[in-house]
Image (cartoon, rainbow, N blue to C red; front, side, top):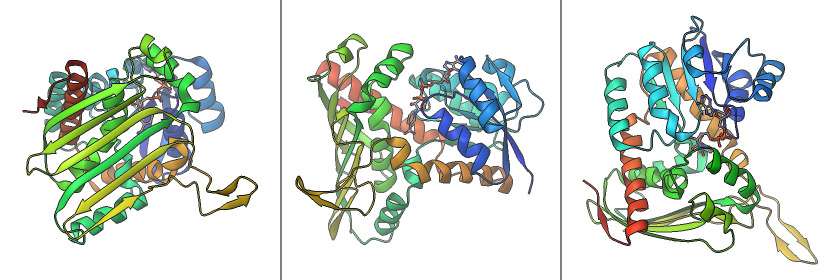
Length: 340
Ligand code: NAI
């Protein structure tokens, strides 16, 4: 099989993980180039990951004649333009979520992607590549839960990451809590139900961290969604989880229900001591989705080699962002928002 040469843009919280996976864990590819605004991140890529080309600008990186593909892990507001630029250079593209923060920009990007059908485009909805979510999806598709009636899904970041999040939100536009966090839950709702979301009502509250007001971000948000066939979804997103990283999903159907990571256990260890019976928790996204991040990039490289497109398409990114932005609007206006 052809070896795929990859360039990565963004070596921050998640970029370092993707870069390390591409250079050490994913068969069939070589991480040859990296782009970041920060010299120390580029030094890390050269010294620790064997990257041979480093760039301060993305435009320079995609001019490199040595690339077959790019992995976009820059701040969310750059994704659309960087996807289009790479597509126009005949490169395959993996982009982190959200695909973009503006619907017209995403639609234009989707058109560019569709105009290049022989290049692979994949979006980083990594929960679809997590073993537990895949197991649950198979059960749903096999009809074991009957017809789904309610999906309940939580994504709450650890309060321990607050300092780094405030820095991230201060440096760039995250898109807000719903586009940054709930986007994964929104994708799960669409993935499990195979239905589109038609109405949302959302709200939010800041209580423990007033510094979030300064960067115009929510600490906790909740949304109720109605799908086109009247299936319901309830989402909770947040940045103040004291016990670790809480990602939990519940599916209720006419024949049964299931829960995924209802208690976000780190592993199978239970500690019994003077404090009681303790289950250590998963602490952050790199830990909880370690294998899913590897799995999704393996799939990206395989898709290029096998000349096929992955399951997660630009359209999924567009639909999820539409819902996330509707949640933001609902929260700001206190109105029920219909999604066209
Ligand atoms: P970060 O702020 O830690 O790092 C951003 C990186 O992008 C830095 O290396 C910076 O040098 C680079 N950068 C910024 N502006 C640039 C520009 N104009 N040109 C080239 N490089 C530029 O960000 P973080 O947390 O790593 O997030 C990056 C993306 O990954 C975001 O879109 C975020 O939504 C997504 N993400 C997804 C997660 C998931 O669960 N799938 C988890 C965390 C982040």
